[in-house]
Length: 228
Image 1 (tube, rainbow, N blue to C red):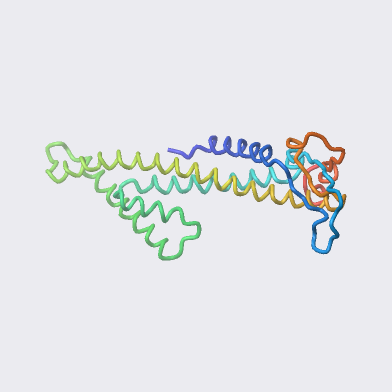
Image 2: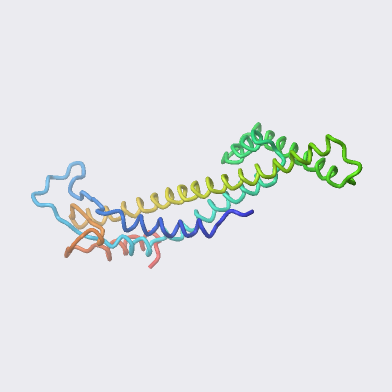
């Protein structure tokens, strides 16, 4: 049972497009910095934010972060699969501990303790299952019946866990992306101030403008390590 990385990758691509096309105006107040005199007339400009994004190092950083996030998600699922013989309460406790980014010594010990419980119970169950039918005691039969119910519960909990993790992955990737976009907006604002432009709109929100600062922004991010 594996975490669906293809789904996460598709979410990444969709969120990127939505974020770029849905930002609307990139508001920059070039003449509204502390100490600047008020402007009589506001100057407007436009920028192709999607082109800026693709030319920057943001896509590469996003891909790297997404891969790390997805790897972390898969490790959590794998950790849960390895403790399939825990009770419902123990599974929940283990899942919460597995979600801690930097567990302390006490949390690590508890995780090992829970895993040991699961391993020993699994070993005992296998020993019982290998017995001839005639040698099974009432306790053995009760254990096997409980194990069947436990397996159904475990499979259901894993499905819920995977759904939760998929949502968490999408949210974490979106947060990274927004940070990258915010960084590009800072560079756009710097160019706008240099060109004495008060307001800059994304080309998808602007009807027309002769002040297209996209080339200047591309040049700026290129100097800062962006792709050309």
